[in-house]
Image 1 (cartoon, rainbow, N blue to C red):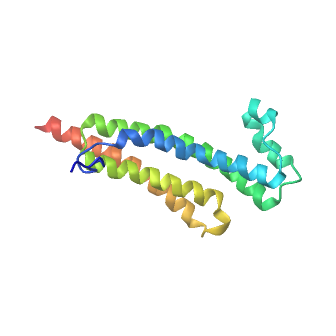
Image 2 (cartoon, rainbow, N blue to C red; image 1 turned 60 degrees about the vertical axis):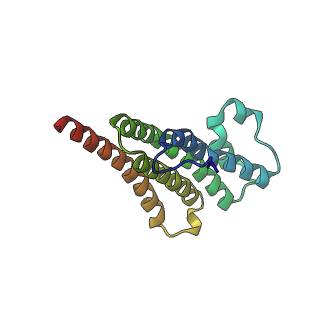
Image 3 (cartoon, one colour; image 1 turned 90 degrees about the vertical axis):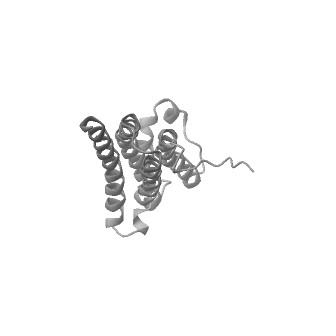
Length: 164
């Protein structure tokens, strides 16, 4: 019987993790909008839809939102910003690794690991009042190291080719 599941050691799925990383990066914005709606019992205003960068100011100025929820909503916005800032580095690392010919298994492990760590980082960032303080830094550094590992693997693979 034929399996439709990919073989992670043979099939390169790392390019597919780039749009998944984008979804993971934008997910905290959905949380923020839903948390704001739940706290105020009103939908996101037309002003926010036309000027999305004003959302944090609207949340900060709204007295209907308690301080704990307000902090989480604002941290969700910061998690989106941080994830989007790191997305370009991740995409470049995946592209460099694949262009250099790093093995599919290694690229899959590094890129899937990065997406999993970013998912965890976003949750840790938003709910940092529930986790120990160094956890967020540890998650961030793990993601950065996974990207660096992809670049290093690309360099090592290219060097091995040119030295032959």
